[in-house]
Image 1 (cartoon, one colour):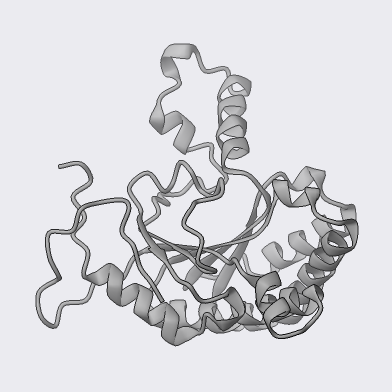
Image 2 (image 1 turned 90 degrees about the horizontal axis):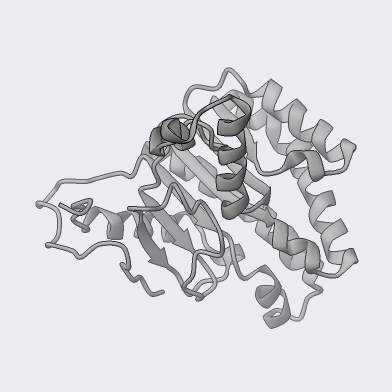
Length: 245
């Protein structure tokens, strides 16, 4: 496993015994297809293993005191993949929502899906809406699932909302845009984790990650277990965040 801080320059580890838990953690869950190929399995089984890997990470994040966990499930660029693979991803999403929602209700986890949901099939929108309604009272942690998501589109949509709300050019500032993102509550990203060995943000939470710490793991997502998540949090705790100061 490797970790690389590309956001800020560290001033040294936290004081002995002191632990800093990020409020908002985001994960780019990469490597499902490569994991499947290395195990001699169809790519669909890699995606299924990736879906299975989400649940223990959600539970560990909640245990550790993370307040917002955002996972990148399907980008708008993923429509360019083979039709069969896209259909597999959608069917896995539907099944996961139906299977996991009761547990999330019990755990007090609120689900929100980020992205251009109007572009999705009505049945998928219905599944998403049901999960959001069922978990709306959850106050322990927010689970953001980015589906049909693009960071650039999110910023464009926020700008369009400013115009639709009648704001003048002088009124469109950072606060106006931030309040109209898909994540309107204070949701500055503290830690961005990417699995699979690549070191890029892939159009994910571009606005929110302005001052995020980055952690890159060589593990493929299906192998990224709670111990690996703890290692990422431990690495984060050793960072010194100055926010340009």
